[in-house]
Image (spheres, rainbow, N blue to C red):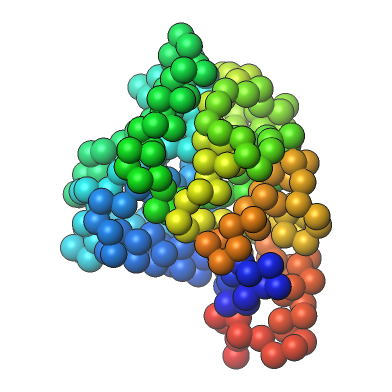
Length: 266
Ligand code: PGA
């Protein structure tokens, strides 16, 4: 673990498997401390290993998620959870349908509402009535998005519908191997909404993310890379990156030369 000058924590682990273990530990710790914690978990490929570990820990009786309030991060506009291109459906298949102790309190984004603004405001109130997020685990988009806060998203943005970038549509299309249409608009929790979480864990793996992770963590914070705003959370943010994703970080280099306390240090 490296405590950065901005106060947030950088944890560099050897590989994606170690990231998954470490991130699962963070989720488990929050749920053990607060069984009715409000939590959000990401979709995408990065969290799949973490989900496998959580599924195993729940099956082994180590973790009881039955009282967790699970808030979805994002959903395509006009898409219902039962639709084949739903992110809520995706999370169901990747995690919720696999756990032996069900997570019953699931809060999807109201992306099929006729008045999206009013529905987004209701979603925010629902979250507030649970006391806000105790933990949000986030993936990092190739264009720097977090949830579906695309480039241009400001630090104080709230839950809302927005237009996706062609890059994000192509990324999403690949998840379904091009077999389902990806709507051009999505509803997402806002950056400001996420920044209010008690604990924020950004999980990043692979060389392909090295450059965008460097921009998010080591360039001035800006709406161009929405993930950069997470640094405003100071010590409430932990970035868990594998060595490949962290390979372009000066912070990682200086930790190595200045006496590292990386988790994997020899
Ligand atoms: P990925 O997506 O995990 O599939 O790389 C991350 C994201 O866009 O949040």
